[in-house]
Image (cartoon, rainbow, N blue to C red; front, side):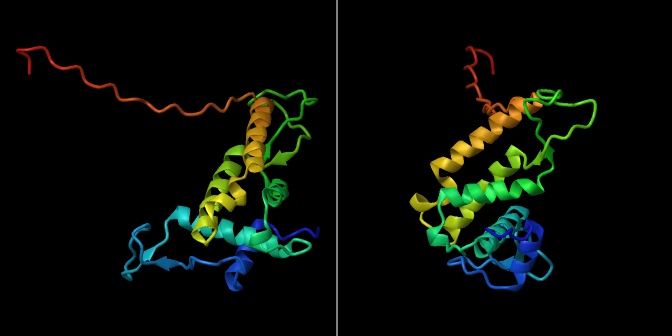
Length: 190
């Protein structure tokens, strides 16, 4: 497979050309929905999340176009999504220590080391969430969504666990704070 463009280049180029995978929602810079904030022109602009989702979708579309052989969205599987995530690792900025590194398991290493830079688990998790939503907004069926495949979920869990051990930081699921019901006031108070 030829090396596709970097995500920054791909998303910039895809703004100038029509994307073959956009089968439904028209992503433009303005929308009439109430999802964004109002501008002085009367039209609403897309929220930061919507803009990021559009850029991610365009980047993935560019990746599919540059894939050898080129892939259509309908032929895209969880394996292709994993290939895309591994491709993105080369642009990562998170140091992930290998088990043989003396700083393995240390959140703040005291010196530099040759361990690779990777995409952070949280970034990949958020990216998959945005692409999963964009897929369905662009006409894809939830049951055929490659971004929600079992292989992708397992890969993200594996990355999370590996990075957690390598950095000595545990990623614990945030627990929702339950609001305890207020006990009734005793008679005569209140």
